Image (cartoon, rainbow, N blue to C red; front, top):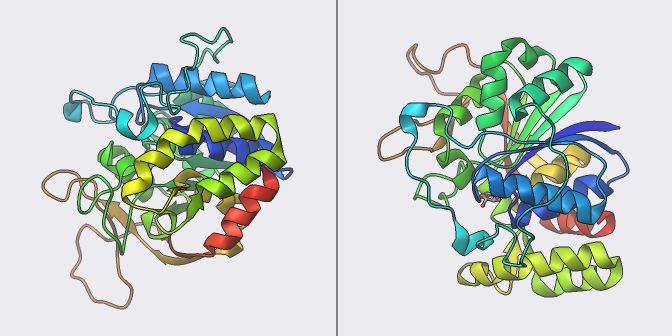
Length: 314
Ligand code: BDR
Ligand code: CA
């Protein structure tokens, strides 16, 4: 069984990813930690509770960060309501309050305690800003040696960004946190736009899944319509399933190709939030790239295989 903590900002594609983890027989979902990004953390936490209730997910929800890792960066936040809707879940009228308990600990503490309870076993799947993970590292750096691996949806290496010409949303939203996560001594796998940007689920594919899958997939189908409309400028009647790709990696890494090398994130300036992997086989004078852990960046994906695994699982 893969013991997973899902760090998320639901978020339409986050919802599909959560359902995938919940339904996969080899995943033991230990907890859901929330972070700001697609909406405020109040909204993403409320949405996590809503999905937990609707899908009868038996895992605790812990509320996470609502501001960047480096307070100096904190700026006025405008949520991407044009992507995920006013409610963060495609304007389906999620109730304002979901009367269910939230774990009393902040997300970073939940992560630390859970990792320490299962040394060497926990897989952190982070599909929002990396703030909670960076805070967990700051409060307890030893967890880096106790986590099995960290799989993130974020970044871009050989393709343009989606919020600036060089940056992807999850990384751009908190570059200092992302740089701390990429350079910590743990194993990180980066599932970025290089692979999520070519993995499109069509409206019909999702509708067929809903017909086959029943009520829980029908809810996902309703949630996704607004997001599919948003993607009309990019793909032909469908949506990119960014966050599900990271979850699929957990159970089916053979559907991805990766390249190794240290990864850093640009913090500031015109390339703020850009992810860079040190290329192999070049000589560089000593400097910022020395003594960094080798991380994996995904550069290839079997998109049909990924979509079909999502369909079968959900
Ligand atoms: C990422 O940004 C968010 O909008 C999505 O949920 C995904 O995690 C894609 O850039
Ligand atoms: Ca997300």
